[in-house]
Image (cartoon, rainbow, N blue to C red; front, side):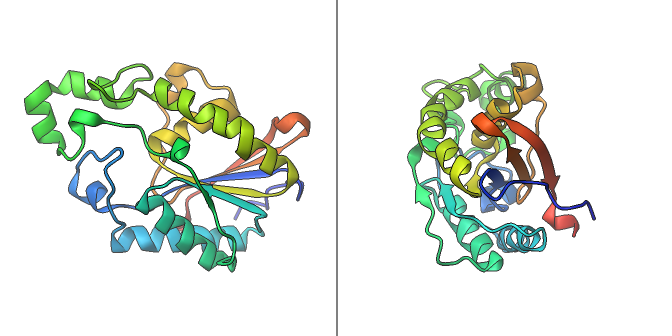
Length: 216
């Protein structure tokens, strides 16, 4: 096991992706459509909390979105961590990227309807977006004010926990790690995975540690 993250109790930010949802298991696009966790997803959420507890984390603040899969993951993780009394701040700024016309479709249907190359561009690229949907760039622009106004100040005061989504969290990782568009396009965040940051003065990242609770 890696040594504990060398973080200051006053400056720490931890990002966790929600556990597997039913649409993950069925291979459907969801975006802003809500989809509950599977049994595997609930296990991943609890495992994330246990891993954080084993690593010595304890949080002063928590944030999540307004969507069920993130709320449920946050609840289960905090219960496993022994902090079920820590109520997360919920905000739509942290909601997942809007897939619009792809929402609710499985990949095979989406490929047949719009073409595989186009769908993969919408799904993976930084600037590609479905009609009336959001690109990753749009998601970053939506989340940045909330990060600057709420999450970053909280993380400079005490350890802070954020539960979110694959694309939405990629936007936060991009900002924290100074990634360019090509780097963030290649980034994949597994369900239940954890990315922990030790922050220096000015909320700059001085150390990053990743954890996969499913492997513990």
